[in-house]
Image (tube, rainbow, N blue to C red; front, side, top):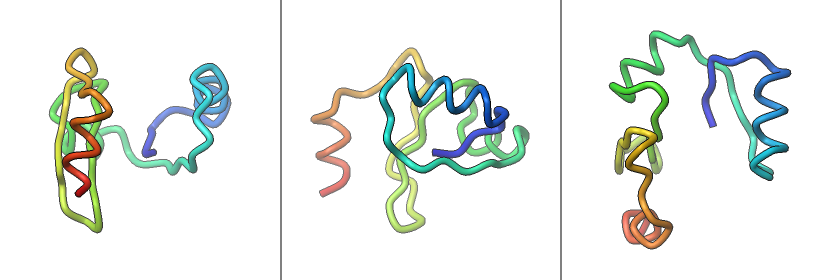
Length: 69
């Protein structure tokens, strides 16, 4: 996960959503350029963008798994 939020906010978010995943920090402008929406979700695999979604259009798990094949 990439975020421009502070460590305290990120830890709170991870615990609220039970996300046992690593997270890294990036500049907010860079993230907005990648996603073209704020907030949003981007799916990458080995440096290839597989999908970008606005947070209101979050894909179903099955769609994400299909993209990862």
